[in-house]
Amino acid sequence: MSDLANLEQRALSELNATDGEESLRAWKTRYFGEQGEVTLALKNIGKIPGPERAAYGKECNRIKASLGEAFEVRQQAEKDKALERSLAEPPIDVTLPGRRPAHGRLHLATQVMRDIRGIFADLGFQVYRSREVEDDEHNFGLLNMPPHHPARDMWDTFHTMTPGVLLRTHTSPGQIHVMRQFKGKPIRVILPGMCYRYEAITTRSEIQFQQVEGLAIGSRVSMADLKGTISAFARRMFGEERQVRIRSSYFPFTEPSIEVDMDCIVCAGKGCSLCKKSGWLEIMGAGMVHPTVLKNGGYDPEQFTGFAFGMGPQRIAMLKYAIDDIRQFWGNDLRFLQQF
Ligand code: FA5
Image (tube, rainbow, N blue to C red; front, side, top):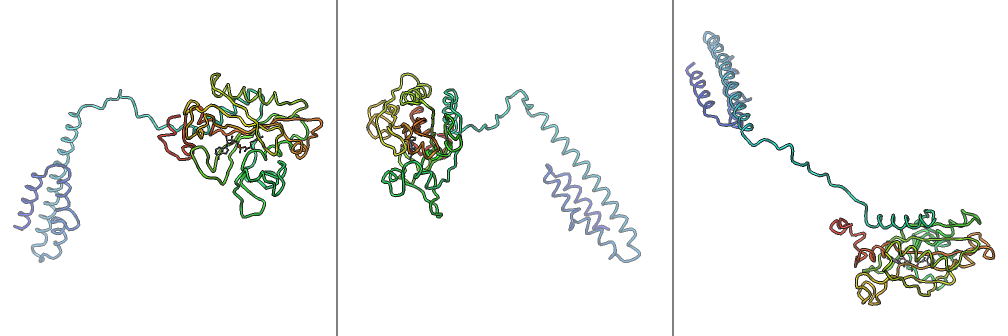
């Protein structure tokens, strides 16, 4: 019995000495936990010899109740103290502006693609989608490049394991798809999409890049229409003050063929690594659709003429925003992308 009195005294003085919720929890474990002193004393009741057991058990239960009560009082006091403390702290300023959620944005390539589509929509061009995995026939053959034609070397190609199936090197195979679908009706479309070339990656060339093909076919479409369309596009895209240069070129699927350059914005025409020291950067190839290609698409070259062009939106973005390295486009560096 004296042990119990001792236990009660000790527990009460330790309870009074607790400071904060943590020491209160530790006290509870020490006396009321599975191996706590009060718990063990209660478990001990059965072992006490008969005549003393009732008195011992009664005392145990009294101590349990009184310590339990003392604990509750102490715990409430702790809670009151915590509440007082939090009330004394400076109040939350509900007028402070909230934290802005992080907003995503359109990738620069998407923005430029939308600008290009918008300009051509105003010029009356529809958007036509064409596949990225092509066959040899559409990517080369029907574009007037039969097997072993030397012009195929202009496009370093990713071939798949399936013979004759490849990743398109340009959007021009779409010309054939469109012509075969329009079946002899006039055409005015653009074909945007991704192209793939097995070539060395440099500041101006990627192995994966976008192109926008343009195709217009009608009974009296001329080279003047092509030049007018390209100039209208360049003025809208880059502003009146920028320079466009048209020079003759060669593509097997156009005759005559041209290439279109813009003055280099990075060096203002002085010559830098981006423009290969020429002061100009090529943005598209173009020309009048070759009669053989018209025929392959199901159009009679005696009745129809057409122009086509294929431009590189990444190069266009580089010229518009003075980006000196094309690798930034697919590098996923937010410091670059967040600037646009
Ligand atoms: C062609 O791909 C032709 N199909 C374009 C064409 C279409 C000519 C219709 C006539 C009629 P070229 O290989 O020059 O041509 O590419 C066209 C444009 O794609 C280039 O002017 C350039 O802006 C872009 N381009 C080409 N290669 C890359 C590359 N590796 N990385 C980024 N852009 C490129």
